[in-house]
Length: 167
Image: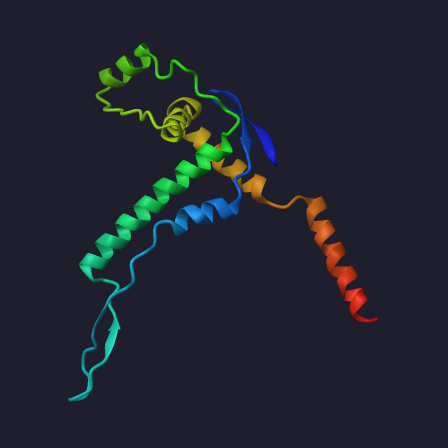
């Protein structure tokens, strides 16, 4: 498993690669609605044609809702798996943290669901500022890029397969 030590404003954290198939599975769990059709305009008399209607208000609302849910689930899975070696302190959030949120007028609801609880911890305690989130996003890109050794290995396999074709 690939992982790196990522230094953020809140400390140094171990960040692990997240398999692409996992994120693809998360996205596929929320299907996008099909684009509806409407009657085509300016058709000859007696001819009925339909055309896609991507501006249909019901479709746009359903698509936006599905995209928002996909984004939420994608972020949830990515943060949970990337920070799988991070443990949430048993006392988080503490009373002082809750009082601070309340003083700021924030209505923060921390779920008792273990996955959602951990994601909330990452978003509110691990990421101390926007730059931390940006660094995390860069780390995810780096972790998912093949190394030079992996690229060389694939090139070697390709060359050997081509050499074998000439026999």
